[in-house]
Amino acid sequence: MSDAKTSSALVPTQAEFRWVLIGLMLALTLAALDQNIVATALPRITGDLGGLSHLSWVVTSFIVTSTISAPLYGKLSDLYGRKPAFVGSIAIFLVGSVLCGLAESMVGLIAFRAVQGLGAGGLIVLAQTVIGDLVSPRERGRYQGMFAAVFAACSVAGPLLGGFITQFASWRWIFYVNLPVGGAALACILLALRPRPPSIAPRLDWVGAALLTAGTGTLLLVLSWGGNAYAWASPQILGLTVVAIAAFVGLAFAERAARQPILPPDLFGNGVFVLGALTIALATMALFAAVVFLPLMFQLLMGANPAMAGLMIAPMMGGVIIASYTGGRLVSRTGRYKLFPVLGLAAATLSYATLAWAVRNDLNPPLIEAVLVVMGLGIGLVMPNLTTAIQNAVARSELGAATASAAFFRSLGGAVGAALGGAVLAAHLQGVEVGGSSLSGLSAIASLPDVQRSLVLGAYRAGLSAAFITGTIIAGLGFLTVLFLPERPLRGAGG
Image 1 (cartoon, rainbow, N blue to C red):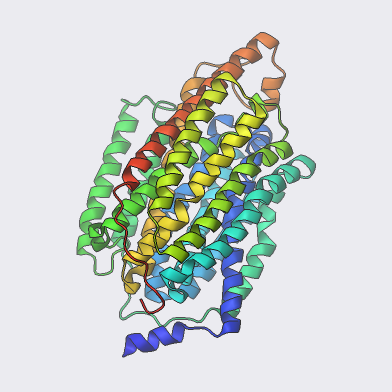
Image 2 (tube, helix red, strand yellow):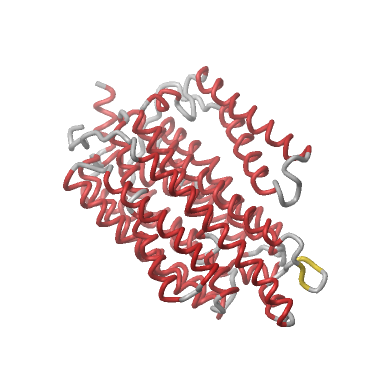
């Protein structure tokens, strides 16, 4: 009886639902803008602050903290309600945005991006969980289409906005633009989202949280420093590897003993969750192993300015959104979801392979743009449909934990992919110097004598091609994995 009362208390009026939906879309806008607006500014940021060798950590630090915090937000929202968790995540994200805009060094920017990530971990997770509370899996396709429209605007406008802000104002404003959007999202959530009574005797899994943090953080350090700052067989890397393995093994035991675990062990007995989360992780790993370096390729190898680099990324993002919107509608109409990620990962694998060949042989702009469109279409068929499959396969009482756990593996895949891509690129740049010092910015490379500049650009060309080959291999593994995904009928409104 209490469950029925709790469920009815969550049902908003039509007016409340509309405002909640606006708040969710604004929160997704924050996440989409931050993922896309920063990329085109990275070369200019490194030119102002230095530290080109740390470029991947501007992305990685954000992903590490958002990866760690995502399961925490999911569990906190299950225990204490979606509303306070959502408000907290947006507030922390906005504080981090202000600090990033004020950064005076690369180390400071990386640290403040980590703060931003602590808030960002809840944005997409809680938006997906709230809509999962309010809408059945069978009906969710239409709302995925609305969310896709938000991502469409932000994914296309984000790189363009980042490029123009960087070129005509300052890269610092790419962080300040989050403030009005976040303020509006906070207002909608505070006014319209109904609070949910906490579950009986809520207890946060502190041991699990500590082990999750230790395991994820040390794993990323291994991937970032291995073969770059330290040799793979060095005591530092081997020691961090041991810590990571021990932390994840300890996490597995701790979650079995925890009364309210962050990563519920019974989820890992669910075939749809396991294979769906693994496929999401591999797809995101492939995406970040390659795409994070596209602005660098456009500006360094193709001579584009930051604004043009943003424009050149837009077709790929448009492909993602078209596929997300269309795929979500088709899933809602047919009740079947497996075919779409299968086709999507096949297309993504072929696109990565073609891009790797093009970087090595012929950087023809029309070819590159066509490949990016197909890549975007492929990736767009994977993420939202697998999230729907996972939410459909678990009980409503596990919705927050399942959504957050899938988001954890998605974020972990992105972190591993970004660090792996950075390590592959850095390996090709070892020993290449500009004027006796390590590579420090695009302007320094452009001012080199022709012979030395050709040598440096050749190293970057080889490194970027290798990063795209890495994405090809990982996407291929994702394709093989999703072939084994079980397909279950999507529940209707009463499910």
